[in-house]
Image 1 (tube, rainbow, N blue to C red):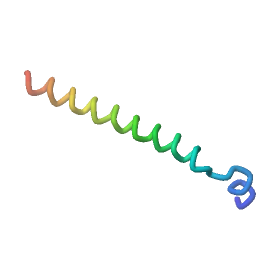
Image 2 (image 1 turned 180 degrees about the vertical axis):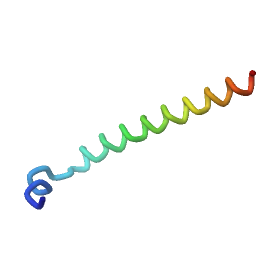
Image 3 (image 1 turned 60 degrees about the horizontal axis):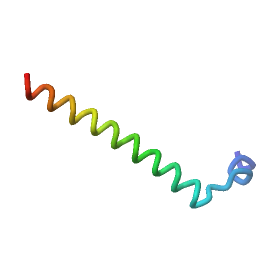
Length: 43
């Protein structure tokens, strides 16, 4: 386990990429929820 963490150091660049991906996924989920709610309101 220790070798795994040392072999792949989490650089700020990597972290930013991962964080951006997470945020985009969350935004997509929120957008889907919003669309679903709007659709239900129209019904």
